[in-house]
Image (cartoon, rainbow, N blue to C red; front, top):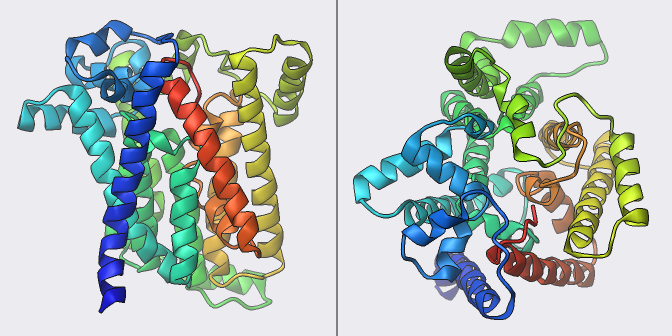
Length: 398
């Protein structure tokens, strides 16, 4: 009986603890750290008359989402996909509350859904309750997880991602297609969901040593439903491209508008070794300041991610997992997401982009020693506190 009560209360307690801790850290930051406010439209934050430690969860990109929700797409706003700002707009119409309150509420509700469905998805991958608890703790302690309660797309995108993967694993193809479509319409990396969908289909196929026969049998097993399900994430992103084509004449305006933000992103492809060399030059020549620290964080967390994904790929190759095709699909999804970001010539925002890469937390959860996981958890939580305090006071962290 006590175990059932704990299981029912665990998710709400984790959520409340996470939100409370972040708001307390935010409040302390407003008292102890000088305010910089170096982002677009900082004056907007003063129009809603909210406590600083709350309203500043809408800083940086949050204000772009709010402007899209309230004013529609301007020139450089096409860098942001529409699902989240549309939800904010509907929320404002329904409740009459300020865009900041609505945006934070949407993110928190989405986070609650994540914490409900994530254990269900992990159970389908044969994760035990103890492992699931470690996954959730590492996920919530991650250095940039405070974006999950900010006016950012992290929560809504990860909600759609997990819902799509869960329905895919349950072979509920139309539901998976629906969630996959909106995932592709909420973030550019959403269309990479086509890969884990495809690999989940492969996992249902009977494999033999005859490759030609395997391909023939797989093609024969396809139906219209399955084809739509696999391509649904790309259709979502394609819908936004079509909108950009009709309104701006440039279907790739999302990528081309990145130069408007002056963040040193390239609109042509940059190779990974060029990005590594650029960061090594920064470490050798740049002045030791907050931007230097953030560059170190970006490089270190990206390096950690690459090592973990490489290790995971090796274990997949060695067939050391259950649900091998599912793990392979998640691994490739993560690689594609990282490479797309790196191809812009910078690791800017990479600490935040790691959050939806479930493979990272799957591997960390399965570390053999508890003390190692505790050390990782402490490191994550410490860096989380530092980055959150800086973000609240207007310093760009991801």
